[in-house]
Amino acid sequence: MIAQVDLLLRGGAIGLLMLAAVVFARAPASLPSRFGLALTLCTVVGTLAGLPHAPTAIDPLLDLSASAAIPLFWLFARAWFDDAFRPKPVDMALAAAFLGCTLYAGLQGAGLQRRSAGWISRSIWPGWRLRSMRSGWHGAIAKATWSSLAGRRERSSWYRSG
Image (cartoon, rainbow, N blue to C red; front, top):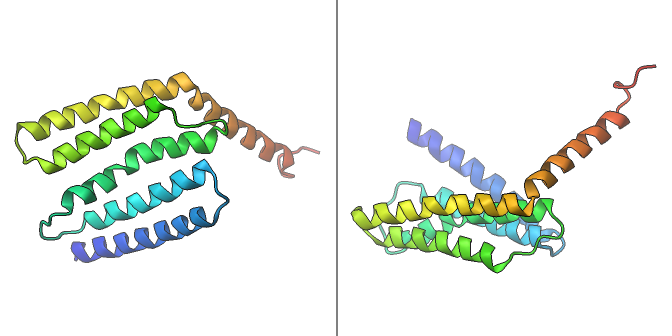
């Protein structure tokens, strides 16, 4: 019963993600739409990779594609909220290091190498966090959210008294 519900939810998620991928693909060519398309497709692969299946030779590639959603989400969020954002070499180096650790862990067994690769990939998160704080995109998100809420409040008729 639970396995069938899992399949139904995964199917619905894949359907919605494919719709989002079509929206990103049809959007005008921009950095956020490219990152959004790659993010949704990697998430679809991750959803499919989570299904029970016999081990195959392409499992490390499925893990790599599914794990690519993590740095892609970070790049997508930065590109979405910061119009002037262009990925710098340090951004690509952090993403490549994370994906390298993921590929290394996927190719190794459940031994010491897997644990060390997991530790290395977890240590990359503070680098992403510091990089995002240094670029100031957290403040841009808060400012954009607050200004859109303030604009809605000014335009709504029920908020005005009188």
